[in-house]
Amino acid sequence: MNGAESLVRTLLKSDIDTCFANPGTSEMHFVAALDQIPGMHCVLGLQENVVTGMADGYYRIAGKPAATLLHCGPGLANGLGNLHNARRANAGIVNIVGDQATYHRPLDAPLTADTDSLARTVSQWIHTSTRSEDVGHDAALAVRAAKTHPGQIATLILPSDASWKDGGVVAEPLPVPTPPTLDPHVIEQAARMLRNGEKTLILLSGQGILAPAQSLVWSIAQASGAEVMADFMCSHLSRGRGRLQIKRVPYNTDVARETLAPFKNIILVGAKPPVGFFAYPGKPSTQYAPDAQLLTLSRPDQDALAALRMLAEELNVPEVSIPDPGPRPGVPSGEVSSEGLAQAVAALMPERTIVSDESITFGYAFYPHTFAAPAHDWLHLAGGAIGDGLPVATGAAIGANRERRVINLQADGSAMYSLQSLWTQARENLPCTTIILSNRQYSILIGEYENVGATPGKTAMDMLDLGNPDLNWVSLANGMGVEGAVASNLDELCDLMRASFAKPGPFLIELLT
Image (tube, rainbow, N blue to C red; front, top):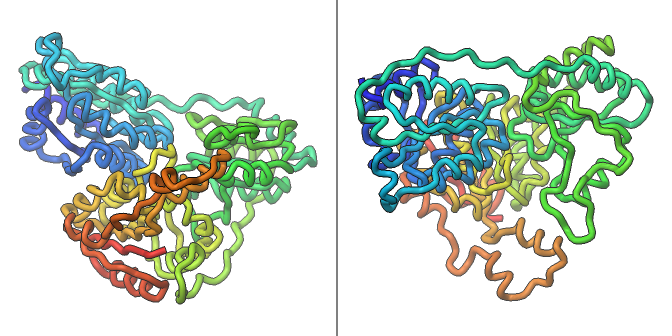
């Protein structure tokens, strides 16, 4: 058995059965092992940032890591943007990065790179296997790291000779560490904070915003008078009927400061203290009041659900049902608007839909108009590196075993970063409906240009414009094997959404906004 074969068998034994790949010459023995050993679902991505984004989306829905296969340091570099997003989303991923043979590396061949340093920018665990005898054990360590709560990026660098030499040994799965212990004194402190009569916010992220935690949060809030919000950058929310009708902290730092100003106490559940996405001249970086008291009930690496249970017991709160959001919205018609699109999604989405939201500026009205939709999962861009919406949608569909419809609400500018995702959707015949929000400009950057106090001129506006020539999204989709059509109003949009939901595979709608 060579090192590559021990790697594949160890991954399978550790319940890693999906590999998103864009291989090269250094990884051919690993590719051969994937071919010869049954059990691994291999998904080809045509660019590494698609590969890493798919692995992120897969983890968020499947709840377990996938592997990626990336070609040397430059291939890893191509995937760093969505690995950054995945790290911020606390996604578990096992990156397998090929590298030069150990004896060839000192010769500085063209693809030689400082792969280790590149990996450290996005990985919580990094290791290079230099002997085939160690590859299986190193793979088991990587899987353990990736599965460590709440999910980590583990990067195993695999020189080609460690892959092709004999001596490989299959390793047994390693026990995954339990989350760090919660501090009972913090639980008591949070209870006192909730009893003191001051205006208090419970700010949620990570595990704390998913369905199992929401009834606990709601019961605590109803008993104490606290308000509940989600962190703006939370990566995965349980939404729709039967779930909390919760708002996120606003993106705009002025609006966020105004929203958070009344709160004297903020209890963080899997969330970090809210800060501005960027610094702006003359504005503070923090978004909460200067005199607010912040208390971390549970860090992202701790068990938020257990923390909320302990807090509910400390307060002795009765269970309170989450309120009904009212009737499901009707099918809209007329001109395109953010509110109209949200209503269309809420009115037409199938049960258990997954929404991958990279709508950027057009999505401001989506939340309030989708509270009464069927129960669904909503995935957000977590790290701010645009270009994750399409690959996250693709990976999520695979993570759901193609059994759930995925709707990708996708800004046009950021879609061009990872357009190749459509090809993978077609090859895998995934139930993905992509709605391209076609305003033909980087709207978010136009707003940011004004926020920093700059005066717009022709050169600046030309760099923020996607016209001249206009992108033809239907042709782009067709070229990737995906059927598509244009909608210029809500009536056409709803007709196309219904038609796409009846298809087993992918469909793209260019919505002219």
